[in-house]
Every structure is written in structure tokens, then in C-alpha cells.
Amino acid sequence: MGLFDIFSRSPAQKAEKLKTKLSQKYGDPSIRQAAIDALGALYVPEATEALLSRFTFSVEPQTRDTEEKETVFEILSERGEAAVETTQAFLKRYENGTSWALRVLENLLPEEQTLAFVCEFLQKLSRTYTRSSEKKRVFLQYVVDKQHPAIPSAALPFLEDMTDDVKINALLVLAKHPSEEARVPILELLLAPSTAKRVQMQALETLHASGLPVQGFREKVEALLSPPWYLNRAGVLRRLDESIHPNEDK
Image (cartoon, rainbow, N blue to C red; front, side):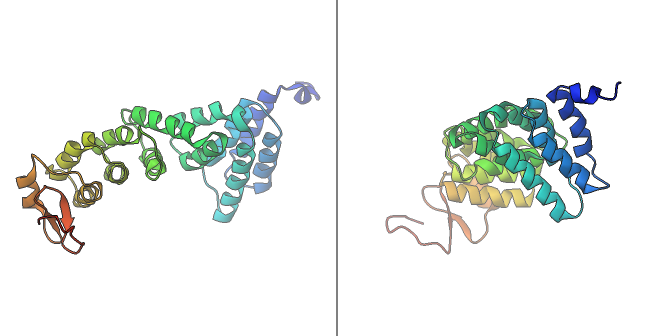
């Protein structure tokens, strides 16, 4: 390679070279910062992907790590529509860095489009093996306080996940987005002998918050309940310490 060959590299080739420097977790942090700044000046998908890769690992001290990630977040958030496809591809491919990349996508797209992407991907993710549950939890936590018609059906399959934390996050979503479709799966999870106690407790909270009745499972549910829980005449879960509607029969 000639002395000046480096200057004839394409932006994509420069981005790949800078990604190597950005990925150095140890040593002089100024090398990573210089790589971030240089990648910020390159407007090609490879540069966007390289910047997103900074979200996949952490460095010490924590303050430095946060500063670098915030800088990358700001750079990517200003790229607009040009960075959408690469950011979505990153979210589909990588198991780490999901929360940061999802924040970036929020800034690149209107909320409705971001939610449509998340709900569609959750459906796929529920059928995909992952070594870590982080991505599932982050996506579920993202939709819990949002509004979109696809949220309940997107969260429902995660009631069968192997990880308790994922099941709990799915239940938290379904508590705020109740649907008749979810009623029986929630009850089956509550009553399954293999269900962990903390998952059972969240299932009860979800039934209570959603107001879904236990029709068809009343006897089994009542055998499981202890104060403050009880079922009213309609088969809806109530607490002893909550106010009762005048027309409601305990």
C-alpha cells in the first residue's frame, strides 16, 4: 500500500477502519472519541452501523461510558431517515445495546411507526432463540405505556417464554393492554404447577388490573387465593382493601 492510499479509501472503507478503533475497550479513551468524531462526519450506512456498535459494550469508568454513548446517540439522532434502516437492522441483529438503539429509532421516526416496527419484531422475537433475555425485556418495557392495537397480540406469546423476567414483563404489558385473547393464557400461566411464585403474583396483579374474569377456572383460582385477594360474584379478582362499587356483590 502506498503512502497516500489511505486518502483514496471510500467512506465505507474508512468507516470499517474507524470501527476497529471505536471497539477498543481498553487503553487511551481519546482513540475511541476520535473515532466517534470521525464516524460522525461520514454519512454512509457503514458509519451508522459502526456508531451503533458502541452501544454493544461498556467501558470503565461508567461516567466515560455514558458520555461516549450519549455522544453517539446525539450524532445518530440527527441523521434522520437515512439512519432508519441501519438502526432497525441493528436492533434485529444484536442482543446488546437494544435500549440505546431503540431510543435512537424513536428520534428518527414518528412514534406510530416506531411502535409498528417494535410490535412486528416482537412477534418474530417470540419465536426466536436468544442467549440473553435483555432484548425481549427492553422491547416489552418500551410498549407497556404506549398505545397501538398490535401491542396485546405482540406481548401474548411471551407468556410461554423460558425466562421468568420475560413472562413478568409480558404480564405487565397485558395488565395495561387487556384483551379477551389473553385471558385464558394468563389463567393457564397462573395455575401451571411449574410457574414460579413471583410470576404467579404478577399474573394475579394482571388479572386484577385488567378486570378479566376467571370464567371456567373459578374453582382452581379460588383454591390458590389468599388475602387480600378474592373473587367477586362476576369472577373478577378484587382486593379486600379496595373500595367496592355499590352494585357489586362480593
